[in-house]
Picture 1 (cartoon, rainbow, N blue to C red):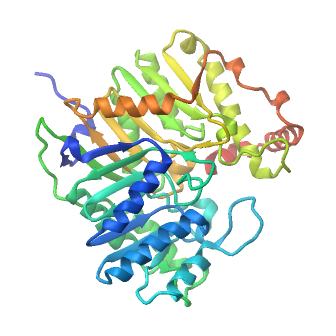
Picture 2 (cartoon, rainbow, N blue to C red; picture 1 turned 135 degrees about the horizontal axis):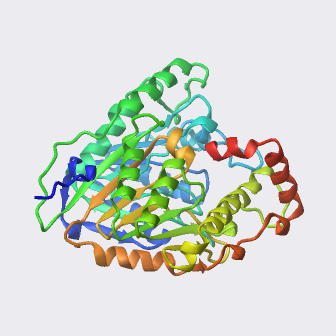
Picture 3 (cartoon, helix red, strand yellow; picture 1 turned 180 degrees about the vertical axis):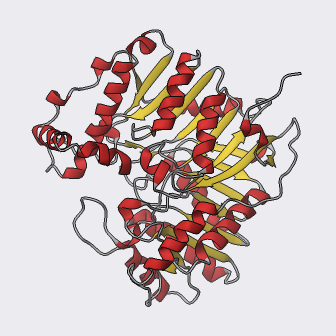
Length: 446
């Protein structure tokens, strides 16, 4: 008798009916689904995202939340965003009113308030943010790596492409709400940004350290359910920091469990060492590996050569340098089709997909960028799906087809540009950071 040594089979699970799992294929569909769910909510709305932006899409979402709350004051409505991100403008943009000012303005105009909680994962944004994902509306979980603004919701001409899934599972929704309430909202480090009297980061310095420590011990709590052959198994996972991080461990275990194929999406090509190691081992044991990554021009930090260059615009080029080195080291595997690399590019839109498929059996829905920052600094979560009887295969194959629609396959590393071909300001910046060996530090925090 063979012993199953795959640790993923020992994870506690919840049972989900296949018909209660939906895949959405575009940012517009995602926006329509969220708004419809908010309008129809009867008992609770919990939105968690890196940010809720002070722009047209952000105003629309907040307006719908307030309409729902005024219509039904008993409705339990809460929003969580990153504390630091909410109190500054966009990177590289001119100083402006912050997102927090918008939250307060809305609160001042309405009788029944919607709290928008700022979650400080670390004392400084550069060392860790709230990267938790999930919108829980009644018994439905709408899960995506997307935040809430014009580009993520395709409110105007451009969109930022992500993955979008809807799971109707009351125990999963309850578990995620319980975590948001107990681990985040109820902690003294977490404060409502929509009110007049809020502390400074300095005021809550000790509370932030305590929050970080408690988050490192936290997990989603639920009563495990047995899963029949007609159902799929679902496990919510959470992790922060590099020690005893269950989410990180599960990602590594997923990759190690692969027998036939691995399909990975990441917007920023900068694998943590353990992920790079597992991918290398998988290729060596004959697993077919496919990696989908955004072209540098589809990176959200990309600055066109016609525009004024800012330092942050060097990031997409650093990621492409990483990818070129990886492709060069795997030239033989690319030639033999053991490894396929797809670059996504669609007009002036950007790419923000994350996730892993293993053997058409395991699927990881996550906002985790699969980079060192996600591995060590940010608060991340995921939903692991085990589909042992192929109930979701057709849905996921359609999703993969949708993802690959705007990609080109890299057949040789020379297809990717060299440093010498980059715009002059980019060359100057990259040579400077390489000379002082700052690239090693940057790779850990970006």
